[in-house]
Length: 458
Image (cartoon, rainbow, N blue to C red):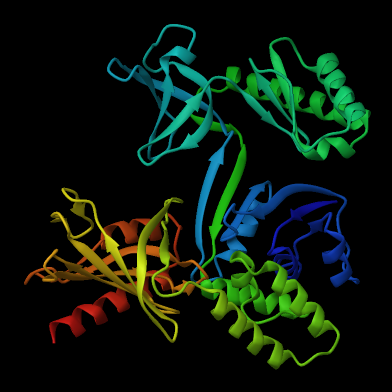
């Protein structure tokens, strides 16, 4: 039996969540295993979950990634991006674009596939079938390759590649073993990328996996020769990127609290600079100390350690395309979970998304409130004349020690002139259609935008 391996600050909560949804969890940490004394865990895994680098969400990769994604779609404010790679297609050549030197390939999908001409050996003939692999998906196309990757649980076989071993494997004997297995069993012109999990496997298991991958590829090539219609010949790997907002972290707090002591705002504090304080405090709760007083003292401590008047403060806008936009300013007001920063903007630039030109000395006041669904921005001239007011809509704001964190919902209420408007609705709706955001979250964002537009007109 195989399952999902989970690592990171959300591991206890996600383990509880997956077990509740009848999914198998594999190789838990000692800490997690002790919290689920009655659970049965798998020895092997086909799916891995780990944190984003900023701890603000998780990456899910492997065979069960789609199932994990579906579970997280129950969280209204979670933002979920999916990326598929490795699918092998029988495609049909459409044409060669002489400008971009890309071959256009019909995959039977809404978007075309683009294969760089330099990766294709042969004559480009319209209507000819071609075996291609999906590398990644872009907004307007799929990027393809004829350099095949075969994905196994412990190894990826790479055509025209070389052998490489995970940096997490340090044991010299294991490294020598993996190199020897690759040298003895990889076909000519192929390399092996060994995953961390390979270190715990026996030689015969690894040899069998390589042989099975080659046998599967031989079947794919036979199907390609036999078939003539466009189709998927083999499915590859799905990766999900799931971004959490403050409310989602609080839901995960509840799941963790069901199985072990958990302070208020556990995951929010873990993503800030207070991880050690969280661990220490929860050990005190475990020793039966007063939980209410501990939470009160933590709130006092974190408030004291937060940014002060005059300090530099950031607004981290986590975009739905996976990027993060940082707005930087100096704190000019701070009281009762409300912070106002003064941001200088570059002369000669355009203040987006309201498309107003920035002149020398112009600045912006940005008002941030904990748990609020928007940030209010006031645009001033160097002479302190108010030029515009606009609101950027986001998931509930999470005030941290040196930054405010939220997921930008791409909606902006523009009150810069008499033509009041909501900007970005089409983009948000596109994200909803793609399954990146939930219908409920889009409805909430639209409701907030209408309320702000109405209140500003009064």
